[in-house]
Every structure is written in C-alpha cells, then in structure tokens.
Image (cartoon, rainbow, N blue to C red; front, side):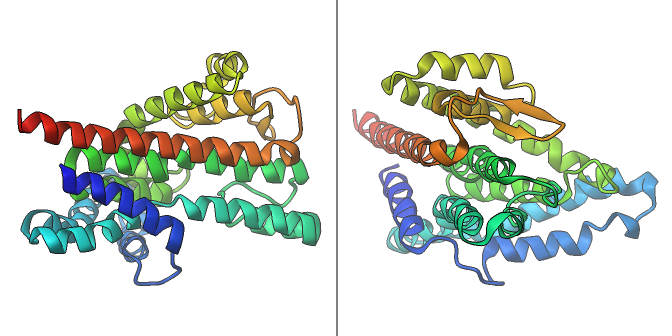
Length: 306
C-alpha cells in the first residue's frame, strides 16, 4: 500500500513534468489502433455486431491490461516503483487537458474564429464549423470538466482499488467508449463498451461532484454550484458527465452550452473571464483526490501493522 501511495504521487509528478507525449507507441495509441482494426461495423453482419462489441471489448481490455498486470504482480518492488508511475501516468491526462484548452484559447485570441474552431475540433466530436467564440470556449471547457472524471479521477480511483490493472482496465474501457460509443453506424458494436464506461464512471463522477462542491464551498460559491448541479446535471446526455460540468459551471458562474442541445449554468460572466477559474477547479479536485487517496493508502498500511 505504501508503494501504491508513492506511485500515485510520482505519476502525477511525471504527468506535470512530461505531459502526454505524442507517439504512435504510447500504450493508448497502440490500443486505439487495435480498436480501429476490429471495431469497424461494416465488417460484420448487423445481427452479430453486439456480440462482436462484447468480445472485442473484453479482448481489448485484457490485452491492454496484461503488461500492467505483469509489472504489478511479477516485478520486484524496486522495479515496480521505477516503472509503475509511468504506467499509471499513461492512464492519466491532467496536463494534456490544460494544454488542449490553452491551445484553443490561444488559437481564438491569435487566429480568430476559424483558428478557434479548428483547435476545438481536436478536442470534441461535435460539429464546430458554425460555433462562435463563446461556444468554442464552451466546448473546450466542457471537455476539460468532463475529462476531470474520465482522464484523472477514475483512473486514480481504480488504481487505488485494484492497482495498475484497475487503472489500465478503466483506460481501455474509456478509450473503447470514446471510439465506438456513438449513436450512428457504431451503435450496435459500441453499445457494450458505452454501458460499461457509464458503469465504471458512476462512483468516480459522484466523488468528483462532492470534491468540487467542497472546493466551491471553501470559496463561498456552494449555493450556485449546488443549484446548478440539481437543476442542470441531467440536461447533458448520460448520467455521469453532467455532474462535474454542472458543479463547475455553477461554482464559477459561467454558462456551458452545446447549441440546440443543452445549456448548463448561469452566465454571471463570460467564459473568457471565468476560464482560469475552471482550470483552477479542475486542479483543486485533482490534488484533493490524490492527497485523500495517498492518505488512505498510508492509513491502510498503518492499520495492517496494528
């Protein structure tokens, strides 16, 4: 348990120092190519696509988690402490979220609407061709707040429960959902990973909501954060992503909107004015959760010796 606590701290340090290297050999990039190979609906008759989705999901998760399991269960402790932070970091994307948002803000400021649309199109799957500046920023900050759960809290949560295997399994499930979980021709093949991702994020999303409420309470913004949570969390499709989005929108005092689909929060100020506070809220939730997890792991160690 003490080693696991060290790995959590070290992985976040590696993330802040290194970020997310753009390499075709990154474990998640390799996983993505494997999913892209088998996850093509047109290769299979419609009647077996759901079964293919189940089998492909289980195979993808098992193959991706296998090297993580090898280090977790077979490596000597000193090799584990050396390699595990980098493996856990491969399941995280904290600094990358901030960099993607910063790139959108910079593109919008320096290159105008078209540059902003192009930059945010790298973050979200929605059509960005007609987005105006506030909607461009909204798409970027929505992606950041949703991915606070998907890319930070959930991998750390499952690492705390199941070690490297837990973090790797979650990252594989989330990647499968990101690539296949759409209501288009991928509906049948992506149904199983999409439901699995919803289930995996259910508890972490609610933990994240509580952490954010505590953070905004400390800043004197609990009431609007909680009001937005109660009113707006179900406006967004799915039953997880709306929680962090609503709390942050209410706590910061901004409106996050997907035109024609949903509006979350009240526009007390623009996203250009409130963007920095969104980044601070994401950082605060990450640090609070990591410190709580590290403390819990050390507490389990002390209890095992009593």
